[in-house]
Image 1: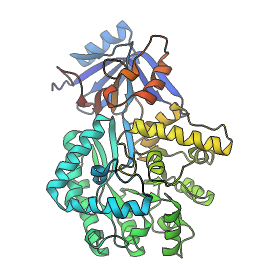
Image 2: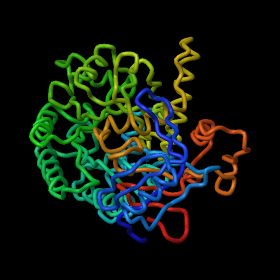
Image 3: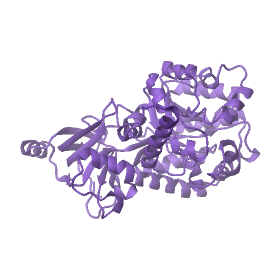
Image 4: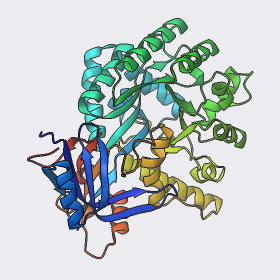
Length: 451
């Protein structure tokens, strides 16, 4: 690959504004600085603007998008995915959460004590998610520090932006896949500081108590202390299914509710990424709003392992600003956020039908959650999630053509908005022509010279 100091892109840019409406900019010029990965110019592509930019930045390479069937999107941000469950994608979809964990999930995660297995699997994970347009992933790994560091290595090498969590569990899990409290805290401390000390532009650690049923008070207190001292993000699960909620109530009798079990230990903060929230009460939602914590909608998983249907519109109506989207592999069977967007819309429409509401999610809402919304949840909205001046260039070149995917053939009457609509419903990895992270092309289906 040739590395240019600056390069340009000419074409149609699509992203979503803060009011969850599509922003369409036709015939635009972007200039990206390769070293920093930042967008240094974003303007209408007049002949004067192109000439001026080429002279100012000594641009040698300009990627020209086909205005008939190509456009730019922000890279997708998967704010909840279990990298270690990748071998189980598509398995166990006939079991509810707790049974599914015991039969499928814990056994496969225990295998990551084998570093060779970890290397092979994590290479597949990052390669596949990049192919599906995931430029940022918030990963659960396993309890194994060495394997978790391998996932960090792989993401860095392949060029994916990633937040990686070494999982914590000290109760209610198999003997061969369980830590002592002290080991869990010590290994987490070592993991967090090792990854922080790398000072990577792409990869950061995240403290990861699996969920309250597998973490006792002493462990949660210790993890809260690590978060307080280092300022790193937190990720976990909450209120995914009714059986789990009842279990937490029995285990943590002193907590007011499930969210309080995290909050009282300093684990519900503005840098918390909490998956599911399917059955959060109004009181808990108010606490999320007060703490400015993020919530991740995982609709494929919620449907596939029969957990429930999260009412995203309810969260929006109650002032929750930080809502993202997650594939939740392998509870969700697909590693594609395009699939997750479709599930989000279908889930909401089913709720609308049963509750006689007209508050359905549009494809613009879904794209927002997969990009700008997830960027807010991951606390990187100042860097990515949109395509604009000063942001990092994490982006996808989308090709809508029967040549790559017969389902996305265009017939000439579609507006640009309708073309994006069609991509969200019918597109897949075949339509993703190139993937850029931090200004670098990390995946490409084209031959020849790429950035």
